[in-house]
Length: 423
Ligand SMILES: NC(=O)c1ccc[n+]([C@@H]2O[C@H](COP(=O)([O-])OP(=O)(O)OC[C@H]3O[C@@H](n4cnc5c(N)ncnc54)[C@H](OP(=O)(O)O)[C@@H]3O)[C@@H](O)[C@H]2O)c1
Image 1 (spheres, rainbow, N blue to C red):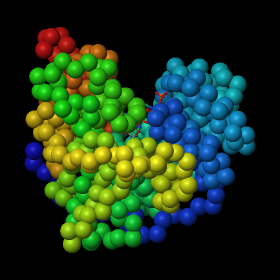
Image 2 (cartoon, rainbow, N blue to C red):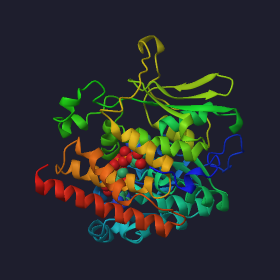
Image 3 (cartoon, protein in one colour):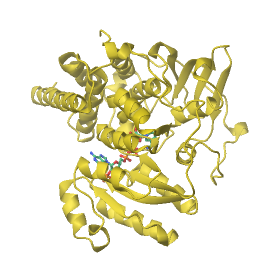
């Protein structure tokens, strides 16, 4: 794949490496998008543990309104004066049902993606967006938060995969800051504390290897959805769990790291590290390596991001080094897990390629979860979509969304043809 000129641009370090962070009075006022998901519920857990430090001012879900109502009631039982004034529900049917609920109706925003943007732009006195949405739908709220000058605690890596350059421009223009939530990028941010960009040699992202680290290529063709969703170390939403099994998650994280830390792709490495104890490493230009270790619990990187990169107290299981056993590192297998290579190539090509990669992957993962394709079909669908749609520059949001839409149609066509031919 030929690199587009945008891939060769100098990438600024989007992460505020060595720069002062935004300061907010307590409680930090949070917009929690994707509140019913894995990241969202863990954020709400942190709020309940620290009602004097965090307050929720807007929430969203797609369709699980009963879950959202339960979460809000639960939050109100611990922090009665914290009732979030704004609620976004994107799915039109669920939105109509939510409008009829006495507790929700009066604070309900528009349906569809517009409601997510409204939550970001309209939440009163907001300081921080926790973007726990899954997929490219997260890009527009990230841009809105950047334009509003908020702290963005970014779990939604797809925002940077699809619109890294656009987000970078909006962050500078709006005076916002992006603090990573992904445990790998949080680890890198912690290793970079007090350092400058010039000191970075390379970034080393660790990958658990997923449930199929030791599965042969022949057996991979027969894996079931239950096995795919059985991640060995992390409990997460279904999309990222599938991405972890294909190693696409690591590929998306390589692109995310490139945008966040301004490091070229040839200086971002991936090592498989089963157990997920070492969350990632930075090698500095003098050869010194720093790593961040801890139990695999997303509340640690989440709290580190939303409080503005401080190590505040957190009551949970501690890592017992005497019980962790040997720390194993191995190279990822490019033959059994081609998605990592596809993501690297798309990231390095830049322009439309990472958008197509992401859209095709989202469509393929949904088809897998619906039982329409097999595990091994995912990289083929992505590769075919990249071959059909990838070239092209992307310099604005409208183009990015158009490329995303077209790629979804192409990938859906590939899946339909596979289903009808019984491939
Ligand atoms: N989970 C983790 O431990 C983890 C770790 C690192 C990074 N991340 C990243 O964090 C993001 C969220 O992951 P997750 O595991 O928390 O996902 P999840 O459990 O599936 O939750 C996704 C949330 O987003 C909402 N949502 C899904 N599709 C939507 C759409 N089209 N429009 C509006 N809202 C939508 C869901 O609402 P409903 O509940 O109503 O469907 C839910 O609230 C992903 O980008 C992932 O890669 C997650």
